[in-house]
Image 1: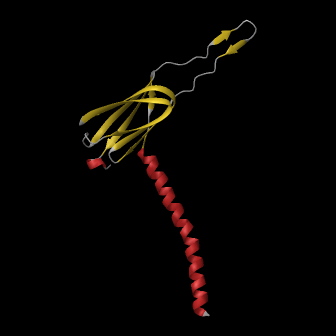
Image 2: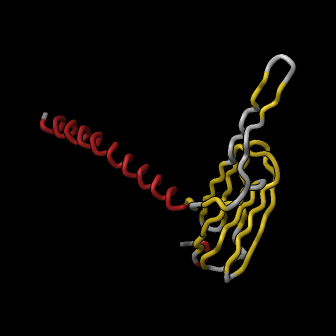
Image 3: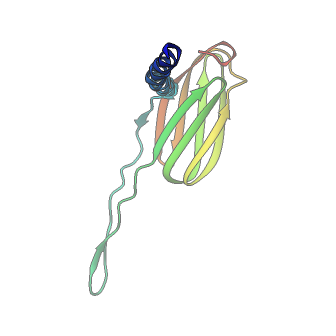
Length: 148
């Protein structure tokens, strides 16, 4: 009877500890994802204004165009670029003291592209993304062999 009660007690304790470990593991993954995100700032560009059109019986206001959303993430030896609310070409430039690379790709409302950084040495790089008339810039720190 003592063995059975000890076994049940161990099982209950294990079940209480397991969710706490899983929660810590998912929090660490979320923090790692946050560290891999490159903060972007918007430079220049034009502002969009809703135009008003008049028809014979009624007047309508054109729907304002949604601003493009650009997110950039880095991992080991590549850069992931996510663009939303935009259709057209996207230009990505990555440049620094240890080298440079660039890429162009087409987006239809929403898209994702992976850019390989294998030709760039360890160091700090500027990232410049042009989406239509909007320009987004940020900093990328690349470590030795793709590690930070």
